[in-house]
Image (cartoon, rainbow, N blue to C red):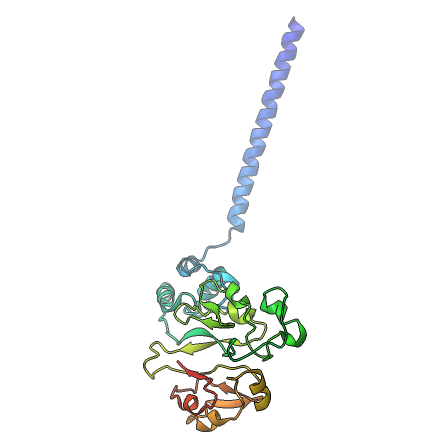
Length: 282
């Protein structure tokens, strides 16, 4: 009986000792982790946190950074301007400028433009495409797609699928951008396998001359006859717009006029002179 009592006492002492050891070990580890956490703690930039909260959170990449977190860090470090977010616009730029203690400079509003007017009424197909309805897939087929103009919009809406703002739609076989909805994130520009979408400045009030710019709504580099055979409204590369421009804002590049938006004053003379009426002023 005495032996049993002694054995039970020893077992109880062992349990107590084990519990004490575990408890002390836990305390030591806790203290160590606490000290290590303080030593390894990454300082939080309050400005970066505030800037990130001001950004819209679309993570579209239109700013040139890997999402809103990347842009917030760059702005907080002074590596990016406060108005870098194309989605937020002037309102977000002003809020971030207040956080950073600087003045927000408002530049021209940018929107996406599809440089093609070759819809189903003016540009045909050379063959029937029966593959996946995706511009990137279609562009890998014979001739870069079934469309008669090899530089034109394929019309399968790959750009539509990438737009988070429902600002681009296919209308009669050609992508069309809603300028009021577009946030100039640039995703449609990257998605287009034909490279016929670009970002360009747009006037705050198109009804007024100030801020308007000319845009060549064609991407074909073919010569006159080849263009006319493929599309009724394609640029024939005549160069009359270049001669008509009073500020030398237009140059010919491989049979296609290119507008220098920094020089263009939106006078509209090039659009009036264009025999194919493929220059837009807005």
